[in-house]
Image (cartoon, rainbow, N blue to C red; front, side):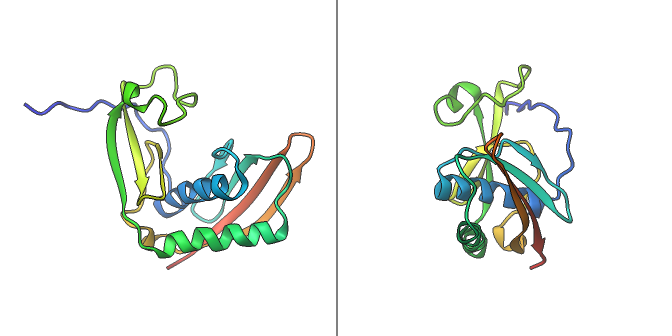
Length: 157
């Protein structure tokens, strides 16, 4: 008899291309700027915003490098897949601090090819070729909070 996987309910309705792009942006920010995944996210169909804890604001050249790197990953046509593991198996592989206290014992890992993997209950495209082109539309720096906020959109494929 096959075991039924029990996950927590997901309370959001994401736009799959934008949400999948968020995963790619997070990994790219980690790679380029040595930061963690976003500390705050608001993902919508028309435009979205992400906040990152950084020591200093990215330069305009850094923002351009981010756009180019994210779009290069999207252009690879990577498959987006899922895997189910236990929280115990996730220890050391993922940051579990963001899991709610009542998180199910089974968690879902979303993988964007071999580029990124993270715990996520959201909806995603099947392949990065479905995302479109990533474009940063504005960004600002909060020196006191050491927070960089960027707003972005996707141009249809």
